Image (tube, rainbow over all chains, first blue to last red; front, side, top):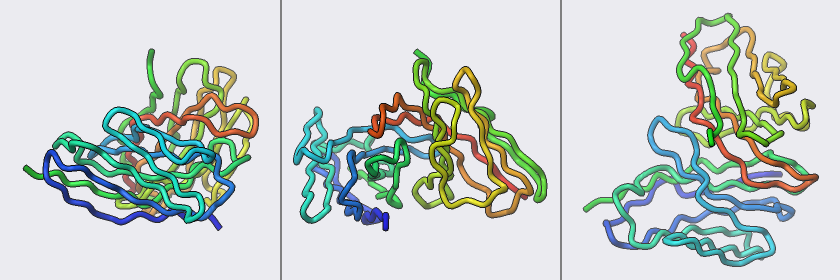
Amino acid sequence: GEDVEQSLFLSVREGDSSVINCTYTDSSSTYLYWYKQEPGAGLQLLTYIFSNMDMKQDQRLTVLLNKKDKHLSLRIADTQTGDSAIYFCAEGPSGGYNKLIFGAGTRLAVHP
Amino acid sequence: DAGVTQSPTHLIKTRGQHVTLRCSPISGHKSVSWYQQVLGQGPQFIFQYYEKEERGRGNFPDRFSARQFPNYSSELNVNALLLGDSALYLCASSSVTRQVNTEAFFGQGTRLTVV
């Protein structure tokens, strides 16, 4: 079946790195995504990784993919208070067009 | 360029009523998907439309229906509203290529409250 799991909460100090973890079940997933949601807002696409890659870096964001363990992580370097939000991991099953399977989200709290 | 636009932004309805939510995709995008996000949970897939045809449907009752128009905008309809239908309804658009997922861009959502 299709399932995406994330830890629910992460608290970090401003300036530290944050690492948000995610596991997924569908080994045929083509793309894996990270979305950010601020209070009362929609979803903002942060980054995504193809399933044939193991790492992608985009400014302060680093995505690591371990296909063997079906584990995805998002590292945010130099975390700022503006990074406080809920982060969703999502998988895009191959052949499923735009059907994304989301995790429950990880709430990131950044404190001074 | 305008992003994905949804209307209305907020809506309050009474149990048993019907509601229509609207979405305009990014210009050039032919695929629209709808998601339901209940408070405290991740979004759940409801429908996907591509080139005006339904391409996928999530595990939602027949009270939920949708359609896509020639200009690729879309409507989500929900009949016989229940309290449990209270949620943020998100629309996503993408330039889907055949059998491959691409970036999906979400609108700000319509917050539906059923009382």
